[in-house]
Figure 1 (cartoon, one colour):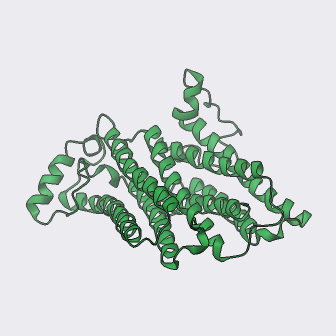
Figure 2 (cartoon, rainbow, N blue to C red; figure 1 turned 90 degrees about the vertical axis):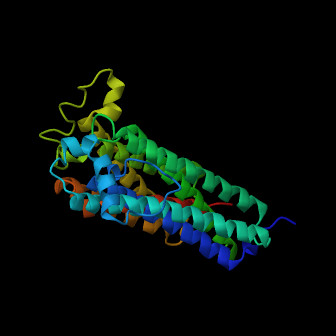
Figure 3 (cartoon, helix red, strand yellow; figure 1 turned 180 degrees about the vertical axis):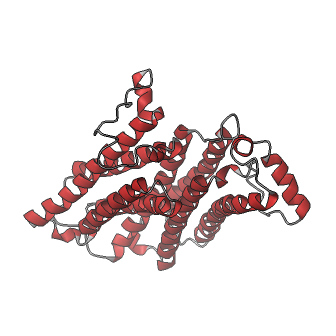
Length: 341
C-alpha cells in the first residue's frame, strides 16, 4: 500500500519545515552579502573547504588574492586586511550555511530511508532538492566569477538565475511541507478558487521577484528615488535608450526599475482583489486565513519596496524587502496548498 502524507512520522514534518527555514535564511544571507559587496571577497569556490583562515599569514594570503580583483582596484583600493576581514566573514558564513543545509538534508534523508520511515515519492523529491542545491551552488559561484573579471558587478542574468533556483528549491520544499501537513489537518476546501487564477497569481509574484533580481543586479534602485513618478513622469524618459529594444527589459536600469514597479503594483492589486472577491462572495471561507495573510503580506511588501526606494536602498530595509518577497511567495503557495484536491 502506498504511503500517504498522513502516515509520515511527525519528525519528518519538523525536518521539512527546518529545511524551508534554512533556505529562507540562506536567501537573506545572500541578499546581505550582495548589498554589502561581501560576495566578491572570496575569489575561489572550493566547495569542499569549510575551515576559515586562522593565522595572520592565512589572512594575508587571502587578502593578496582579493587585491587582484576589480572590486579592490576600483572601489576598495584603500582597504586594509582588517577591513577585508569585515566583508570576508559574511560571505564565508553564507557559503558555510549552504554546506550545512546539504548535510541537514542528506544525512537525515539517508537515515530515514535506511530505517524505512520515508516513502519512495518523498525520497525522489528530496533527491531532486539535493541535486538542485548542488546546481545552486555552482550557479552562485558562476555569478560571483562574473564580478571578478573587468567590473566589480555580478551578471544580472546570473543573479536572476540564482534567485530563480532558490525560489524553485524553497517552493518545492514548502509545497511538500504544506501538502504533507494536510494529512493531519482539515480536508481541502469544498469550494476551491479556479486553479488558473491561483497560478496566474503565483506567476505574477515570481515574475516580480525575478524583475527585482535585475533591479539588484543593475543597482537600479539607486536611480529615480521618487514615487509614484520617475523624475517628472510615470514612464522614465530614458526607458527606451538601449538597442536593440529588448535589452531595455534587462540591461537598462531605468526601464528595469519601471518594469519592477509595474509588476509589483499589478501583483499587489491582484492579491488584494483575490482577497476582496473571496470576502464579498463568501464562497471561500474554507481557505481560512491564507487569503488574508496573502493580502497583508503583499501590501506590506509594497510599503517596504517604496520605503527602500525613497531612502536610497539602506541595507536593512533592502534585506527586509527581500524577505518580504519570499513571505508573499510563501503565502501564495499556502493558498495553492489549501485549494488542492
